Amino acid sequence: MKRMVFAGFVAAMMLAAGPSQARDYVYGSWVSPKHNVNAMVLPKYFEQVTKDTNGAIKWKIVAGGQLVDGKGTLPGLRDSLVDAGLQIPIYATSDLPATAMIFQTLQFNGDPVAATGSSNEFTMLHCPQCLEEFKKTKTVYLGGYAVTPYHVMCRKEVHDVADLKGLKIRATGAFVTMLKLTDATPVAMDTATAVEAVQRGTIDCSLNSMSWLKTYGYQDVTKRVLNQPLGSNQPAIFLFFSRTTWSGFTADQRKAHFKHAPGATASAAIDAYLKADADILKEAQAKHGVVLDAPGKGWDDVIKRYIALQIEENVKFATARKVRDPKALLAKYDEAQAKWNRLSKEIGGDVTKFTAALKREIYDKIDPNKL
Image (cartoon, rainbow, N blue to C red; front, side):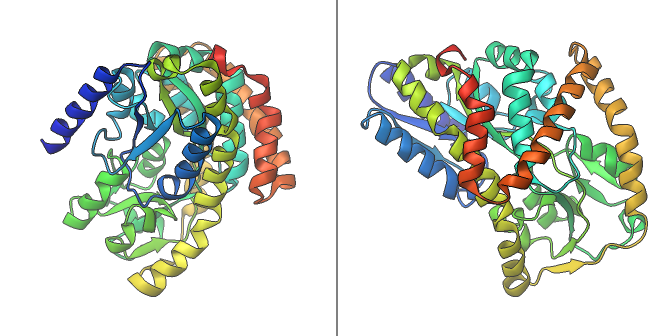
């Protein structure tokens, strides 16, 4: 109830101010203020925008789901409750079906740089249907990142695939299909909400990226982590703007937001995830008693079976949601993946190199005033 009252107050203030009057713009995030993207990446991005607009544009991050939750972000942007936010496409499949199809196309190379590059290039340059979805939902896409590979995090020890039989595990998108191959019971739930569900015993485990031990607080409720990477999905759209807000910016203000998007995207993938994982796991083991369990029998078989199903499942998903020619879209995505797998070898974990590559290969080919 408090969140609804606060949200209504913020919305009223925004409408009263109007697009032409100075005000703080609101980034509504449903993840914790401690999440690396909220704590490390977005503050720097917004500072750069403020500097480039001579203080005319200032942003305030309202995190922890005070304004919008995972499923409420898109309606919040569309209705101008918030000016920007974090959107997971699989939480809005009816509104973002083509984008969601790519989100649930898992990559198994364990490389968030390649996954981030390929998903952004595909979404921004090779997916007209994705761009149509953003216009229809009154949103503007400026960047998304890929997380590091997912692992099963549980309240109890697990090793073999057979250990998961009957366990209730939080999962979304493609991971639902994968978990069904293990005889586990997938439970649809956003990442933040699942922490409390695990703590209460409503569910047994959650499929998470390693850094979420700290950024979401899983280290306090899931003491066993299976050391078996199960692929990753993308893009988590963190530079996602209300089109009403975007249209209210001047041309130079839009350029300022767009100019710094490649750097923020590179930092989200590398600083917030790739570099953070090892340190977060080490700290979780030393200070929170988290145990890393060795994978046992059956995992290679599950992954092989899932990969064999992935295209068929994605086409079925997309066709049911009236995505046009999904096989052609997936083929374009494969091309982007192959390209960024090569580029990633040159980039490594260098944010500067990744920023330059994103700018050269994607952002320089787009006019921010025509989005």
